[in-house]
Length: 482
Image (cartoon, rainbow, N blue to C red; front, side, top):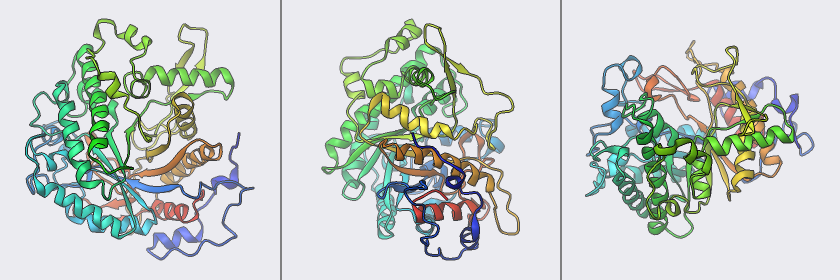
């Protein structure tokens, strides 16, 4: 199996990055810096490079053009729920500045942009009569992207649920409302949008919103109700896939973006690799495992007992509707070793001294990038994989008009070396979307955590390229590690 060496990691940014950070044009990539097949580091010639954002995190304009209220509008305006009382009311003001943001993408040299649609701009009440102003806005955004050579990859639901839907995700009916919305949007946009993702991070909008209560709608439900919310989430995905296929143009690609819990074998030997596969399948039993296998596996049903979700006839067939691709959000590792227990593995706790980025949950373990792709590929053999999110928070001080975020570059360089390893070994990884294009509303952390490669002055809306933007631009230009 291919690995990486010091040359692949590329120690130091070099003069090119400095020029880009200062706003200069990208110099031609000379033969002297192009990695050869012998030295490694290249990605496939048709590899898709992009950046990602989400509607509530960047758009603002929450009361414009008929947009309905969402669960995150309510949650963020509830005292004590979001750091510093921050809300997404203005965010990055991308609703008005989308043309500027397209230019940020263009300057990076990427050819793809993962964006999400605000459901409540299309159907202010979640269903019923569509407001044409919502689709008019997204038509303008998509047309502007295409005019600049950037392909939109559209996520239908990135957590901002119309508040008017009775019961929210506790109601089975919300899954059907989602399918109606997704089919309607796909029918309108698939003449120009060729890749749709149904939902983003099932575990977050179900568990964090209904089990721990740290995300909207801020509930702490009993186990049986949490499991039912999870079921409604995967059902919405499956019904959404069917609805998109029913209304979209032929050839439209459909998948989902999932923050699967990934496991890294502590030692790369057969027994520990097998333990990582078992742990991945078990831990994601209520989400990706159910979607890709079409059933709730026995270990999950046995562990939940009377709290297992109520499944109606036809649900699992819908949930497991075949996908054209699976997209993965990859951040932190979990480490696992084989043992003699009935499960066959033990998950190791993160040690207090384990390296982390600015967010306490964001442990640094670049090898998770490789194992995420490999494990999903070997367990379920998807047709294609994308990395729909990968990135990190950093403190990002603005000094003399610059953000020299070398820590973020360290993180990205090392993770991308592992994604490159996966492509070199033939796993079907087709593209990568960096999270995020710019600093934005980071959910319960408000504006205290910055994930962007562009610094946003939230008082003025000004965008400033960070050093990491220069680094990423160079990587995209080379199609190889920098």
